[in-house]
Image (cartoon, rainbow, N blue to C red; front, side):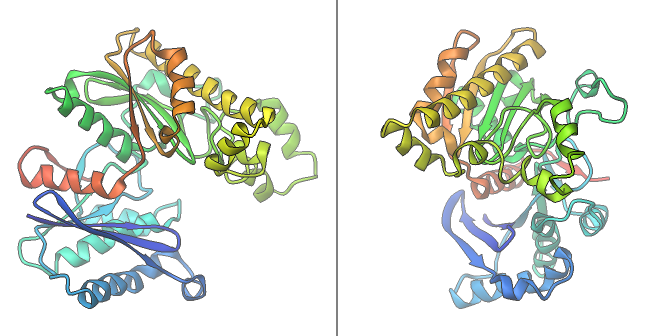
Length: 353
C-alpha cells in the first residue's frame, strides 16, 4: 500500500510518501513570495501547487502510483473527528471557506491527483474545525459569543490513538486529557472517543502560548480597542502573532528563551512558569468536565521536547492521572496513519455533508 500525504502551508507545500506504513521521504516544496503574490486568492494557487507536486515526484523518479492520497484538512464548517472521503460538498466548502488559508487546498489537490489514478482514494482527516463539544460547553455569558472549537485535532487525536494502541485498547475505551503545546496551545477532554470540550486555540481562549494571547481580561481588551491607539489589525497581532511569550520576551522561539533561563534570566523563567501554570489550570479544568474520571494526561507538540516545561506541568496535575509525554507534531505521519487505517479496514470513512 502506498500513500501520498499533502500539507499546504503559507509558503510551502509539504509532501510525504509512505509504503506499507514506512516513510519513504518527506519534502517541503518552497513557494517564493514573489510567485505567490501573483494570486489574488489562496484558492487560485491550486493548479500552481498541484503542478509543483507532480514535477517534484517526476524529477525525483517517484512513481505516481498510490492507493490513497490524503490532504490536510481545511477551515471548513464544524465536523466530527475522523477520516473523510473528499466529495463535491467538501471541495465546494473549501473553495468558499470564510477563513482563507493554504490548508484549504489540501483536499482539492488530493482529489484531483487521486482521480488521475485508477482505484485511488482521496481522503482528509481531522481538520482544525473538528467540533464534538457537548452543548453545555458552548454556552458563555453572551448570546453573541458562543465558544468555538478550533484546535489541533489532527495531532491530538493521533497521539490519543497512539497511546491507546500502546495500552492494547481502543481510543474509545479511555478518558484522556490531551494538551498540544506548540505555537498555539489546545487542551481537550477526550471522553470515550469524543473531544467533548476544548479551547479555541487560534484566537479565542485558553493558556497563552509562544505567539498567542489566550484568554484576556475582557474589559481591558475593550478599552484597548477603543483607545484610538491601535488599528484592528494591530490589536489582532496582540492576540495572535506578537502575543504570549513573544509579547513578554520579544521572541516566540522557546529554545532561545530556555537558554536565557539557563543563563539566569529571572523574567524569562517567570513567563515560562506562567505558561506552564496556565496549561496545568486548563488540564485540571478538563478533569472536572469528565467528573474527575481521567485515565491519562498526554502532553504533545513542540514545547513537549522541553523537560523543564513538561515537568513543571506534570508536577501540578499528576495527582489527577499519569502523565505521558509525546514530543513533537508529525502531521504527515498522522495523515498517513489515518489513510493506512482506512485501507486496512481499521477506521470508518465518513461522509462529509
